[in-house]
Length: 201
Length: 127
Ligand SMILES: Nc1nc2c(ncn2[C@@H]2O[C@H](COP(=O)(O)OP(=O)(O)O)[C@@H](O)[C@H]2O)c(=O)[nH]1
Ligand SMILES: [Mg+2]
Image 1 (cartoon, rainbow over the protein chains, first blue to last red):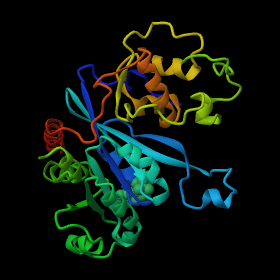
Image 2 (cartoon, rainbow over the protein chains, first blue to last red; image 1 turned 180 degrees about the horizontal axis):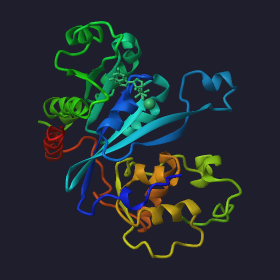
Image 3 (cartoon, rainbow over the protein chains, first blue to last red; image 1 turned 180 degrees about the vertical axis):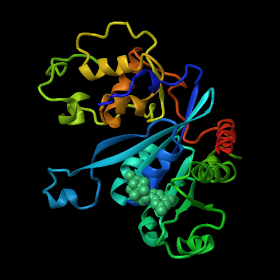
Image 4 (tube, chains in turn orange, yellow; image 1 turned 45 degrees about the horizontal axis):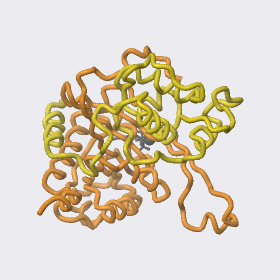
């Protein structure tokens, strides 16, 4: 499938470690665009077949059949320094894909939730799940030409976020802007990782 | 990895895409332990070492793909195999010594603070 020369795909041998950040959000919010903008490799795309975990499916089908869904994921890569690479994984945020990205989230730095102010309600599901699972996240607002003019405080209020949860502007087409959004997430994780409470005294 | 009188999938009638993952992984849908992730860096310590005759075509191609350093997710995409499937195969191949995970196989739930600071510095440098 991959026609490009295979030599380019490999990591330099100096790389010792990897880290990852998840990018989630509803359909059309700009996940694929963001991963493509910051990645230094041509973004990779995979389709995962997953068994739908939605409530009621088994009952509806007499308990014997499970429904499967195909989920597209985007991968990008950033070389942080000669010893460390950062991977970005873009995955859809809807409820029925939770199984997929909770596995993905193990060991992740955190989650960047991309939102479109025209369809804010589509991110309620995702945010609720992140809060429940105590995964650190930041919200990036991707603006489109016909987006209503709301400021970031209004977004934060509408999404009922904790005051410390970062909400940043992000143009998914712009590399620097995407890096700044990822940076906001990482800075937040340094000070507010809910997972580190287990280790702290 | 171990043949056990089950059907031989090394010369399948269908491409791997058409097989449900549990067929290729011989009945397991996920890796036995949560030791490998999509970002795990894989490398074959000795790519020329013969795999057992019972090894599947997918296992062989994964070891070949990892002749040099690559993440699990990238290996899966280049092989056109589902990541969930490659996780199971990689986990077995690591156990059997045909692959190794560069940064170790124990993955903490959250990254350590040294790594986080390196990532911060790297991202600050992106224009
Ligand atoms: N104006 C504008 N358009 C964007 C932006 N980000 C993405 N788009 C466009 O929105 C559409 C959906 O983006 P995509 O990345 O495919 O969304 P995904 O479904 O979340 O992966 C595409 O046509 C993009 O070109 C943005 O920041 N500004
Ligand atoms: Mg997309």
